[in-house]
Length: 291
Image 1: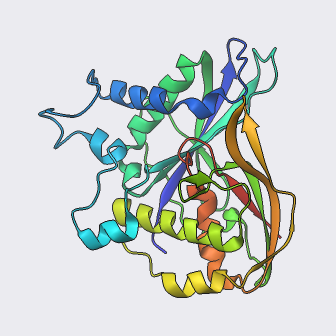
Image 2 (image 1 turned 30 degrees about the vertical axis):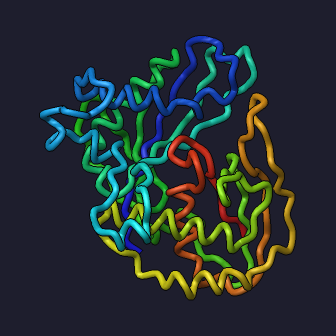
Image 3 (image 1 turned 120 degrees about the horizontal axis):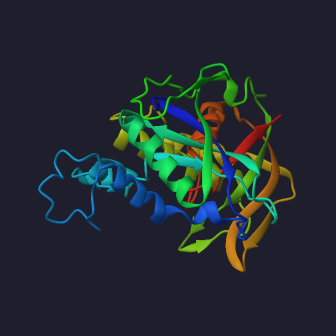
């Protein structure tokens, strides 16, 4: 399954009290503006821009739909090629607290790693935080420092990286939702989910990321996997739908499944890097596989 990525870790210290514990999860517009700033771009959109053919912004933020009708049918609108993992901020007073967030760059986004590092720095500094260090994840679980202002050569990770979860049991696994999962069905947020709903959404996300940003079609038999997923049963679950600040956030908790899970192992492992559901690029839908 071809989808390579790099993972960046930002350790930062809050210079002021932030009251909203979920402030980082609402940074989409701020991160967009920060990336434009790294390009010295003052535009609000790319319409009529003479530099659009060489500018990295459209390829990374434009979510440009394929011209091939069959590809559009299979993959629809491309997701963004990056994923944040944000912490929920501790209660105030939190000034002086040191925290960590991660940023995963998928496929072709790796080529703009230097700009992403600079944009993430601008984002955190704009939220009154000081960067302590930036590191890159290495195969096997180690980390390497990333120097400020550099165009880093970063180690590539893949679905075969053993640090994603290691060997999995063929017939049992638990999915622990670390941040709220926003799965949509017929335009509405699901309050609970089956393994089949989870697996089908993950197949769509991973295949779209691979097609648009890796230039490859994953060797997945979607029809067969969809049928197989329906036979996997939920044997226990404490999942519940939660709200943040009075607004629907998504599903959180742990669900254990039993059945023939071996065909889904690589997909589930890769999903830990890509995350899942609406808002996945900005911290939602983060999960862990537990034995």
